[in-house]
Length: 111
Length: 114
Image 1 (cartoon, rainbow over the protein chains, first blue to last red):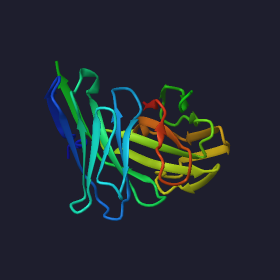
Image 2: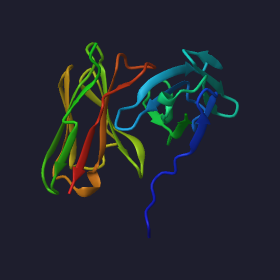
Image 3: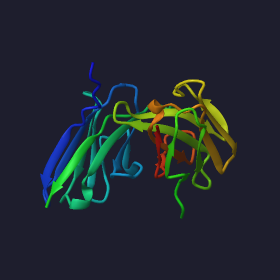
Image 4: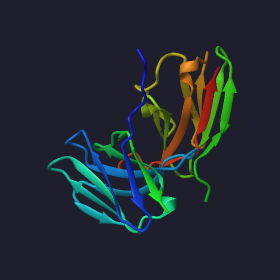
């Protein structure tokens, strides 16, 4: 049969608008979460992290929200710029164990 | 401040050849990770070292893959013999501690096995 690659969710936003990228994580015991940005041809780049004792954390133009009840993580990017176009990954960690990465979301910013 | 350094950045080889990928972690980081990224499977952890000791190699595909960390500033991932299905981007990442701290990734090695 024909093999297929991972289906990457996509999000297109107008430059200047806010972006919201969502992630459903799998392990209810996960207590540390990271958002990474990966541009074409580059390695994943750290954006922001959050621990499970928090439900919101803000950085420069980015905010991460954590809803442990429904195992949901979101990344909000304010005033999205063309340079924000990339694939965004959420990653979860349980205790001192390894990070597990989601499949990613492709963000395209329309000038 | 230098980030994680990987070499080579690109590698093209023929099936059956030995491939060695190299990584220099960020100075002062004592955890090192090797990942593989493909369109089919996304980003997968292959092996993880802490203080130069392999802690978890459950992600290593098979005996053709081996990794070493002879000292705190150098690690290698070797594939022998290589196969076309090994074609992927291989990333090295390092982390300062052994707990809940950020992993910083290198630029990756793009491997193509013909």
